[in-house]
Image (cartoon, rainbow, N blue to C red; front, side, top):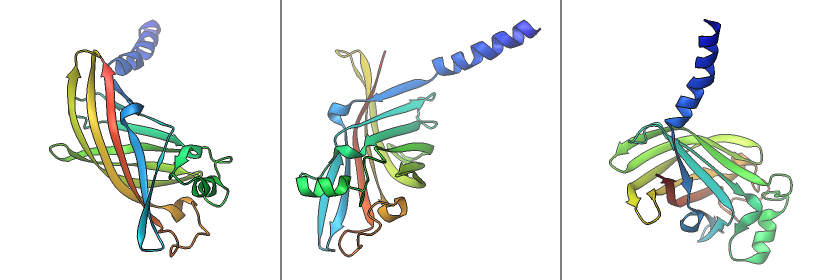
Length: 191
């Protein structure tokens, strides 16, 4: 009897993993963008150059999908070298002390058709807070040449930067507290 129980303990997690689809991010067709309001009159956009993400699911309708992503904070880019250096400094992201920001979903639910809502924990500068994003999934489609399935996605939402300790001393009259997020791209998995 002990042998059977031991075999089940060893085999059951393996079966669970085998039944799970892991979708990998195609970084060449993906981008993590953000937008802030500057001096309450104009928008400044930026993105992260280095990031990775996965989506894991066991269901074809993605209702149990778990999304994870991380970005290297030192890869921030607003196409202005002086501003980027300030963003990397201890005043804002403190990239030497906090080199990575990350997100892991806690729920994923379909709203209608391709529209979903994802809620999860965002970690920036060791501050963990929940955020919710609207997500649109397109596909999956079969790419016979590449021997894989591809899934397009777009996620839109926002977060409050000061709650994460990002630029706490920076006046919200200078740079908005609310940061708009727009994450787009493709996931794929082989077959």
